[in-house]
Image (tube, rainbow, N blue to C red; front, side, top):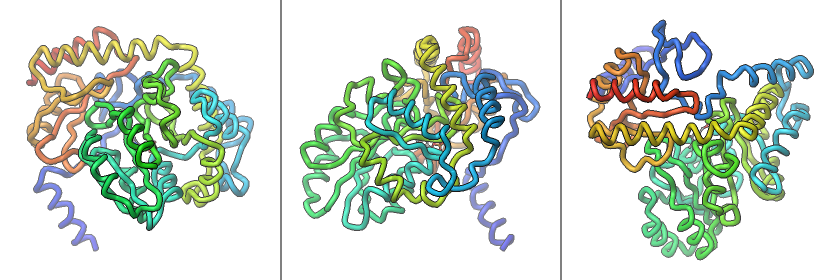
Length: 383
Ligand SMILES: *Cc1c(COP(=O)(O)O)cnc(C)c1O
């Protein structure tokens, strides 16, 4: 076996696509210790700067004192704690939906929800740049996969018009795209869903805590709650915790509890994790300055990069790609930035289409004005 695996690794290496793990020896934050080197962190998804916040750790510790650590079983058996229920109430209240259901991660939410809603006789319309967990959910569902060109509502309409035989139709999209930092044309998608009798599901992983009057996400930012049937989002990015939610109708929640295999056949998240997530939601509510600072930092960095001549694609969010195209050059660029104490990861195929390798810069509310200036300086030097 190992001979075959060595061959597999060599093939990756030859294409410049072999990856390896780095080790962090500090709390998550604007500055981290990476493999023994202190550097400014411009690649985490910790948008509000909460992952290393002691208040989350304290909330978890307190809950552990009361409920111990492990959940013991799936939620349907004996793993459903008061902490999970309280978190779901908090999310439904924030999102103004009838109900919400918690999952152990965004990945398991998407791979659980989609097969619970559609099957063999159905069709799923998925943006070409949707997250891998959505693609995997569609494959697991055995429904027909219709990939439409990125953010192209006209092409999507052509597909919907031609598909008369599908029993159920589900349109699914990221609201903020994780590698491009652009946003979906939600209003158009909502109109198409209505016109063709399709359901609309959104993944707010990079929008929850970032957009919306209270951080509810991009759907709320656009005022389109009524047009969206299934709102999925994660606690693992802006909220600095882990896990995910699906918010929607009571019927949706009941179907997921009964049919989402990642709920039925998987142990519940530790109650302490739910408690830490609730603490993060409270901070998000009480400290709106974090969202303001985050978006200010994003604009400042994006404008600085553009002024220095870098192509940041269609980014309008705290995810700022810097297009390099060639994979090897992107890796060399990232290495040079790290030498200057700035950690930005290089994103290569198959994560992005070939010929579009890039640096993916993400900013956080925790970055200071000086951090942003240092990042720009390093880009100007390395570029
Ligand atoms: C990160 C991400 C996920 C997965 O969420 P995890 O909680 O990390 O498993 C799902 N969808 C999108 C768009 C993401 O960016």
